[in-house]
Image 1 (tube, rainbow, N blue to C red):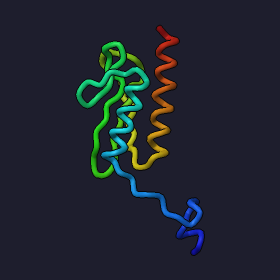
Image 2 (cartoon, rainbow, N blue to C red):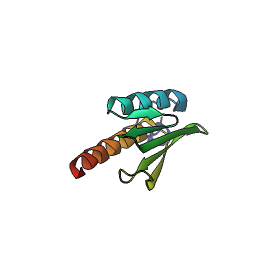
Image 3 (cartoon, rainbow, N blue to C red):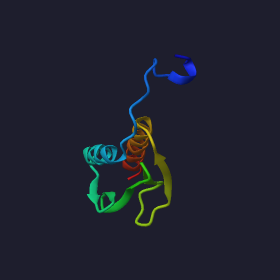
Image 4 (cartoon, rainbow, N blue to C red):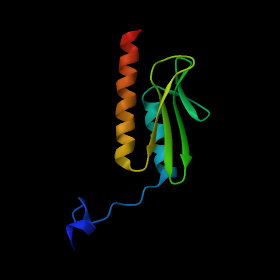
Length: 102
């Protein structure tokens, strides 16, 4: 097998991304961070900070730039497990920053 076929996975293809299962895992991780789930989003102290939506085999995530009642959003499309980890790391950084600011 050529390296073009195998990519960086040692001759094995990664499993296909299961957006529905990943969404359940992501929601659990966000609750573990202390966020309250309200409808399609998550709140911190009554302010919406994350919104999630499954679409076309991926997850669209919006993360608030600042902790506000009407936030500005950064949008990411999650299509693989590394994208989920990257989003969780970013949410953790923002939570820590918001905690320091208050």
